[in-house]
Image (cartoon, rainbow, N blue to C red; front, side, top):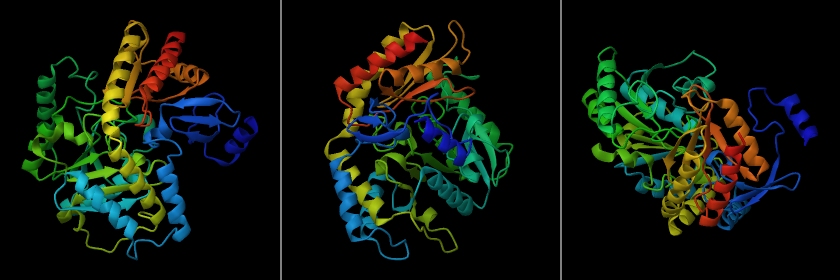
Length: 426
């Protein structure tokens, strides 16, 4: 493996992060498990960054990909594309957005980039509201609305971005407030901010912040924001790249925890729908989606092969009620991890919902983030046979737990036991 690592370093940019002091090469997977090039077997609680949503090597998806590849792999959006239309119809119906139109991309970054294009064009403004501690992608425009220093390498931007309070419940100036008071304070902050700006195009927000360490506001915050946004004509973009498709258990979309004032104007998705294939996309009301006044296409977005994979994967998820499984098994896993955390001084908080759970680590007896402990726990978990992720705000000190949605109770218990040993070791 060291030979491949040397080759990697010789040709891949230094800023392409690798996990582990001795990086691993994953060669194959099945169900909720993967194997590395040395033959080690791991329980996968990260799914290639929340992307292997249903299961590794899911027969229904591999069959759909193989059969479609045998017919035609590529045609582009310049031609009618039956697999693309069929998946768009299903997603439009599931989105909750009236008179919805769907545009497919190849990633969440590109989906958010497209949403920004739509919002700024529709509103004739380049001002964007984003949440502190947010992450929306790695393109020039999406980096500029990312409120997480670790993932924003430049301050240059085609947009003017203003950051709003509310994405992190248990840190910051409003952390001591009750949920109702927290929402009230964040709404007042938004009102005050809008008193100092020109016309704003949109607010973009992750219902649960992914790279930010699986933090979230109290339910209803974005519904309260919506009342303010609507008075100003500002659009609401829900970034569902990580929260979509039932991962939160309680809801199919993360925005539904904030549905008091209706669905978002624009919804972006990616990751899990393709189960590893490159699928992203945007859903918006026809009035917004059709407002572009120039031609546009997507060479690779909506390719027949990726659409076949997405349709098969979505069908499997719905037919097997994987949202319900995320709620049931995720609820058990959350309580188990909270029990473990109560006995580990370095654990500040165990949070999340469904199968999207975060464990925040600090130096014992303080609120000071401990990225070294998070890195050590990540290593210890791998040595124990478990793959997890990490993230967080000012310092990367949160462990991210996001298994495929078909996780079993036995696998959840196995993973929790490995995590307990890893946490106690640091």
